[in-house]
Length: 449
Ligand SMILES: *Cc1c(COP(=O)(O)O)cnc(C)c1O
Image (tube, rainbow, N blue to C red; front, side, top):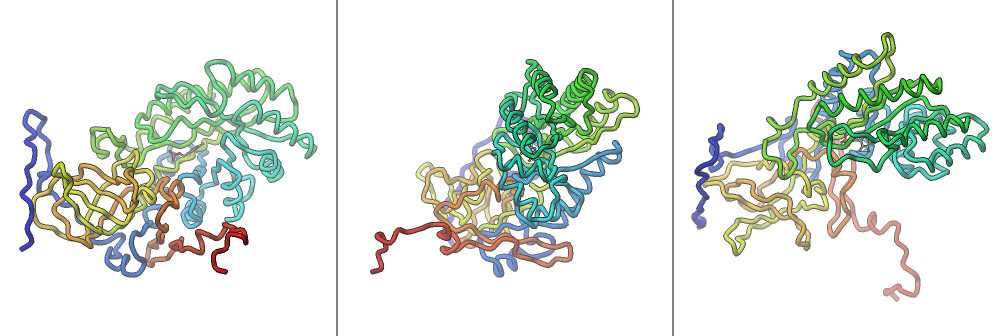
């Protein structure tokens, strides 16, 4: 028998009784993902390992799309590249019917390379250099203007190409979500957006045909979207009535939540995250309330997180255990904040791949980095885990494979499990050659001769 330190758990007297299994004994064991065992996955592809479920990506897309298209006749999803721009993930979204939503020239180029036509690319973002604007305008992308300087730049592009350019305008507004995202687009309430429309119409080189707004991410309040829609539709009609410009699309951005848990929020996501259906209900209801009869502009949505987050897992391996001086149990795993960048804000589900004996105790999970900030989880109730136990973190499909850091460690393999259970590597683990590929060592610094 291995010695186990006795555990003292704080009595939670005076708190509300909670229904559910005792936190002292509850285990969350996961032995497989889509029918492929954790053991097989790690044996073939190593640890840590990102795993995406194609089945889940496709069914999430279909579910969310149907929620809207069953209620409104003209719906388009623009897949938010920055949420996860792995080619395989983007290709699945495009096969399901999404156009591309990009926020930089790099993302624009990625979408084009995957085979998406310019006219099926929504080009957002505050930084669109001249040559990127020119390329996008030539290829008739849907450019959403972020600021006045972009209007001037686009007018120059129109002059150079000798054609009028159709553009959308990004708005920011108060929808009741605070802090308000006011740094992107032109402000509605201050009159700045209408001034920009005036300027654009006077210039005569750009034709405004759409409106865009993205109110934030992980928005837990469906009513905020109803306010957004009402304000956008109303603004669109003001533009139409005053300048004769017809809004062909209303793009309400992304931001719908996944069932992840924001740190510091009290309720578990099952209770705290509204069902996506209530978003569809509020948004389409607001459209029907505010649109003029017979007017069905294209409703564009740019959801990233809600589509991809829950389709991704990260498998890691317990490398060592420690007892901290304050008595807490600590584990070191091979996956850190370099691979799970969003752990700074979100608390993941932690599952283990095997049964374990003993009482749970609050545990802290560190990554492999020699950096104090490398903490993946604090306070999860875990039993005493043996070395080599696999920890499975989820949901991790949103933003981790774009915001990850090549820092201290190699980034690992990413695999995709097909609906038939076939496992494909969709991004290979890094090696030194890949990491140093773009470096140049001046000859005089060569230590070999
Ligand atoms: C990031 C972003 C999105 C996607 O946001 P999610 O929260 O992942 O749904 C959509 N549109 C724009 C303009 C964005 O910047």
